[in-house]
Length: 318
Ligand code: UDP
Ligand code: MG
Image (tube, rainbow, N blue to C red; front, side, top):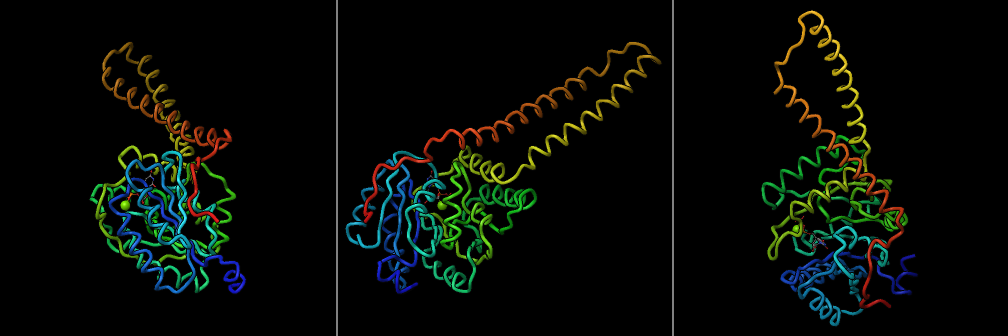
């Protein structure tokens, strides 16, 4: 098998990197990637997806491709479709038997790729990772811990740190991911669903050296919704249960108030308590409508048959 791949010049390893406005990181990234992959002594390719960058990222990637055209390919998106769609597109194009993803901002050190491959060699089909000490601000770290906790609780996806993108996937897992044709998804979680024999390793995490995080609060909330509503119906079920408990309590309240009406007569006190309860319940209802909308939106996306991303051009496709 390995011989056949060598003959057909199919790489053993595909490294997938999503890129969105990373001009200040690309030179350093390319240099470190090539030098650490060369050390592994396995045939490899690197696939960058330019996710609608507005800076010089594409230009820099193209000149890098010119120097190493035998092992670099670039997918240039028509617009910004998000990190996970950028990875998805690269999955559809990569050829490797093993596929590794990592971020372009060097927070995932390319030197750690070898650690993942050791586990693949041991027979695992999906190698996740957790960051030894996370180098992000306190808010991001705290939110991430909270979402990790909620995800463990309400989905059947078990991993220590779903946010770490330095991961290795076997070809079979990638095949399933491609076949699932999901629109807004969370790739590490999706992969876990398809893996037969997953494991995790500890990896280093570095601070972002240049540029800024591409996740503002809105994008962060959207991403976490993709994870939670994409992999669990528990939020909806909790809502139904909450509705049932409230109906029951309201029933008791009605009986109690009826009793008072008969025994004491008309009363007008407690109007602010009534307001407070009403506002609380209205806010719960609005939240519920939003939540149903989240699931509805996912269904809409999946049945609309629109492409998940549009590719402007591919540089280096043979
Ligand atoms: N990214 C992308 N499209 C986006 C947002 C991010 O391709 O819409 C890429 C980005 O260039 C980087 C990776 O996804 O390579 C992770 O992004 P970032 O470092 O901003 O996320 P954080 O580390 O803050 O979670
Ligand atoms: Mg980052």
